[in-house]
Amino acid sequence: MKITEFQTQCVNVPLDKPIATAIHAIESVGCVLLRLKTDKGLEGQSYIFTINAVRLKAFEEMVKGFKHLVLDQDPHYVSGIWQSIWAEINPTGHKGVTISALSAIDTALWDLVGKAHNKSLHHIFGACRDSIDTYASGGLWLSQTKDELKAEANAFLKAGFKSMKIRVGKDSLDEDIARVAAVRNTIGPEHGLLADANQALTAKQAIRLGKALDEFNLIWLEEPVPAYDLEGHAEVRANIPMPLASGETEYTALGLKDMIEKKACDILMPDLQRIGGLSEMRRSAELASVYNLPVSTHIFTEHSLSIAGSAPNCISAEHMPWYAPLFREEMELDKNGHILIADRPGTGFTFHPERIDAFRI
Image (cartoon, rainbow, N blue to C red; front, side, top):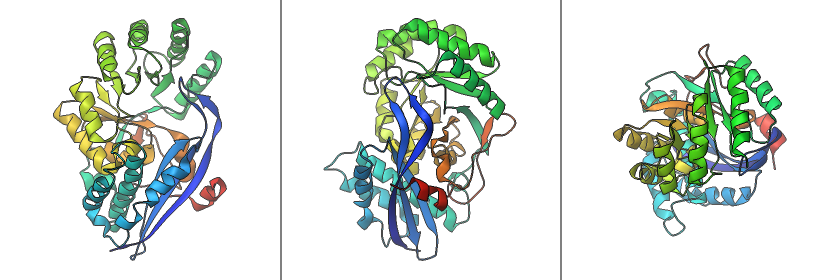
């Protein structure tokens, strides 16, 4: 089997309404879609994104820049192709848009491998489960009022979620506390609640917030300080009562290795786009397991489920609905609020042509 076509397409998927975190204002997610077609009639698919489609064309050009390393190759040589791209990006760097492009290609190659064998990737990788804990992440934004937070929390419960994540990082500590309290009082003590500061705080602010939120029994506090401040992460981790989750902004397993060595978090959150595709996410989960650390996949829910279903130390997958309009298939929850890992070939999700045409840039 040989790859005969390498196609990219830019789309912009609008959100239902504008949202805000402590550091982002988001109206849409712009995506570069990648399709790798073979002489056997199979197609591997993947995507990467930018908030509000900003600099999306730069991402597309970087992906297309590796076309010569992919065409005419057998997709089963996914590791060899990964290494050839890794070597070629040395002059431009092993972080940033270069890794995003590598991630898109690697994930599409694995999708092809699964389809070639008519097996789901979590089975090919060595399955350990067919469902995994998840939490609703597509709401409870910093831009919402307390009444809106309570209404959305109720909507998540009605949809079958057992856990959900609220964003924190207001200018006032008391306001953050009141917002978390409003959601906790709405969902009750039996449901899980997580908080994400989106890198908005200093270490001292994060420690104050973490201690203040202890009464609400949070599953974790996420990215409390800037991603590059590993010493700050470690200081916060040592001084708050709940686990600290982070790592979504690190590139490749080498970035996660730095976090581990600095004792910067309790739970690692590899992001499929930044980590280097499914190949490097598998390596990252294995690296974490050596240190007895759990991982939880960051966004890219549909394509990350193959890791969630094959990495024993994966404790959850973030349920982010932003990209759902791209796909024919839908994510499903079971009665326990776990997300099902579908037994379909490859990643288990395929682009929906008609919907995508409506988002075309």
